[in-house]
Structures are given as C-alpha cells and as structure tokens.
Length: 142
Image 1 (tube, helix red, strand yellow):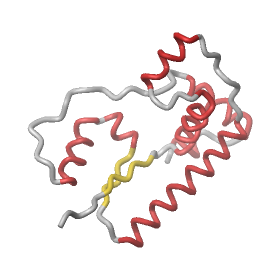
Image 2: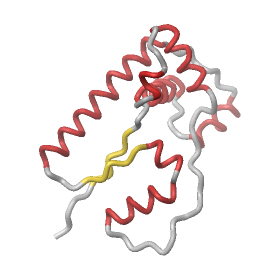
Image 3: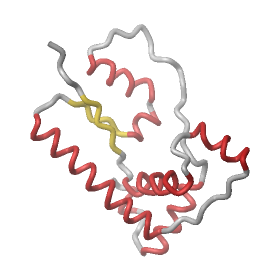
Image 4: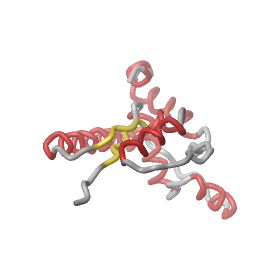
C-alpha cells in the first residue's frame, strides 16, 4: 500500500510572499517564464496597492495556519521546506525532499531557481512598509 507524503512549502518572510502573490494576481504573471512573454506584448505594470498586499498577507497567514492544522491533526507524513532555503541551497533542499520521498536519485540537476518579477517586489515592499508604518525588522527576523 502506498503512503501519502506531502511537501509543505512555506516562506519565512510572509510579507514578501504576500507581495509576490499580489503582483502575480495583478499582472497575471505567476511564473518567471511569463515575464518575457508579457514584456514582448508591451503589457503595462498595473498599479499595486499596499492595502491589497496586506489583505494577501492575511490570506497567506490563514492558509498556512490551515495547512499546519491539517498536518497536525491528520498525522500524515510531511516535510516542511522553506522557500528561502530552496532558493539559497537548491541542491541540499532537493536532496532532503528526495530522501523524504524515498526516491533513488543519482544526482540533483544543477540549476539555479529564478526569482520572479525582478526587483519589483523589493521596491513595492518598501512602499508597503512606508504606507503602513510597519518596521522591516518585524519581517526580516522571521
């Protein structure tokens, strides 16, 4: 009998996650490969709203609480992976995932994950922090 296993990916910096979600929803660009396609079409950058980004932050926190509760109550095996670790140490994080899944792998493909939206999330993050009066340290320590 096959056992279900889950990979639970979260972000340490929930504000950056909320901003990425807001940008993706506003632009329709959910993957880095789509950016060039939209640029070729001459698509304009839609206005971004700090208020909507904060609503996305509430959504992100609620969704993570829901998944955390699901895993706690279900007893299903899961591996918690943080997005920042996947980006900073792709090979090691993939090795952990492959080991957890019990998959035999000769090697991890050598690749560097791309960050979506270029520098836009960082510029917009500063706008959100300024508009709300939230201190960056509240998220940077996360």
